Image (cartoon, rainbow, N blue to C red; front, side, top):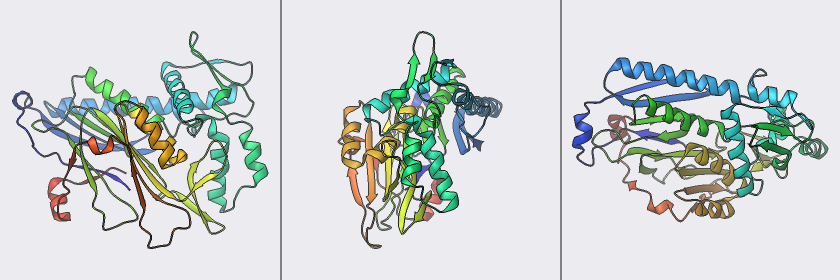
Length: 357
């Protein structure tokens, strides 16, 4: 299931927006190891291009803080230098992400856990080598996993890793936080009508002029006859977590790139989770948490959080090739504004279909 962005349609008169005399500008690039797309409505091209430059610079700053691939990033230095009895003072941004990460860990009872890094590295190696990790190696990696071992000092903004060998992985939360940061940056520059897509994590500002929202289509998987859902959204975030493309077959079983921090094992089956939430950081983290928790428990958590909705499509491990996927939705999903999907691909092309994967 991919999320695609459709050109907005004018559904309501908006004299105030028309009076702004705004023009649509679109930019694309790569940041945080993901494709980035930005659509803004600005008064002139110079303003739009200057804004795009500021956005990419901000994303590069955040990548230098959060990357677990870059040995010089702040996160990598924290993992290298930190340990029991060695608290490290961190930047405001890293502090905010780790604080929210612990919050989501508690809410999900450990299904979301940024300390999962040692196990993630083990499964990355397994996918490269096409060989399952041993139970002994998983158990060894799990000794350094557990969000309770991440101690945060709110007064001094220090982080202490209470076990040696801990490695933090912000892959399930960093892009969502980055989207929120970019929307704040745009607001400071006087731009409110914007859409940002960082590798499928989408952050939406005010709707385009003359419309009631951005049209975002959620493509199905496992059932080609099912039409995409098209949502009309603004001032929120939407994120998808899944393993349609990133998986490995080992011993006849399908293993996801997503790992359960509680067991150390990569998830099996094929599941796609889509979350709509008021903030990008919430949508991103919840999409990962629900994928690990499963549809019933995960969407029960979604229902507890204000302004949040979720949709899950699931093919259990061992499903027959022609089996239809199981579909689950949170209580608020049906309350989101849904539109009818265009009848043909030609319609989509004329309306400006853009793949946001």
